[in-house]
Length: 320
Ligand code: TRP
Image 1 (cartoon, protein in one colour):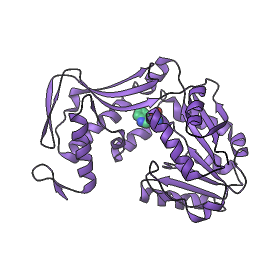
Image 2 (cartoon, rainbow, N blue to C red):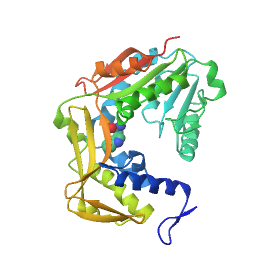
Image 3 (cartoon, helix red, strand yellow):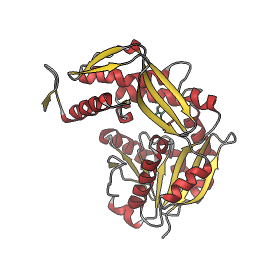
């Protein structure tokens, strides 16, 4: 327990949040970690983003998984375990679970232990022949696979182009880390968003209804709620643009005027137009992702895309 500002007594998670926020806002350029997007308000807004007409990735990836379920299932060895990194509500997984009927086990890995147990119960009801073996863990850190899975062939699943939210060197490190967890002979199914027309990309991250703006601004709302800061949300604006040179969508919160905001007793000064960098979403070509995977020790085995070439689902294999 720590006393932050006057009268605010907080737990360790909030202390860590406060430390990260102050470090990020006193850095040059200013930044905030995207992991703080997902409080309950942020998670609900993210759910809304995935349903927007302009946000093509979710719909397109589900389309590929549905269309190619048979081919993808054929790349899964009989009696295998499917291990999902960051499973959430396992929406995209159900098509695979229904089609790859020879799967012996499903291991959803998620940081939210309580939600995970609820989801596991539901999945056991829906797939009575499948061993559902949840692991509550931060999937970016080392974790142990459940015992029964160790003797099964292993297939990793990492949809959502979440790999694009890592810096490329971190994405490579994550692929290596997943390889260590899954082990030799494993297969890895990874969803990756593709480089495309700038307008299409930018609209996906700056929608006409302002849902993505709300999602981004919720970071400041959360700092107000949890840390007692006084950000005026009307004095900041959501910016999202495609940086083609670095092949990434950048999301920022731009200060609309010169202002000073007190955060955890620290005065943070903003110039007019100064931004807080909140997230990147890297876009790859089929080749550039293949090269990244090879560099991380995986061998590209197959790749599926939609008719517009907006999104890709890769299967990688880890040689014995
Ligand atoms: N990984 C997805 C993407 O980059 C989902 C996502 C993560 C996202 N953070 C986001 C979508 C912020 C919109 C805004 O598209």
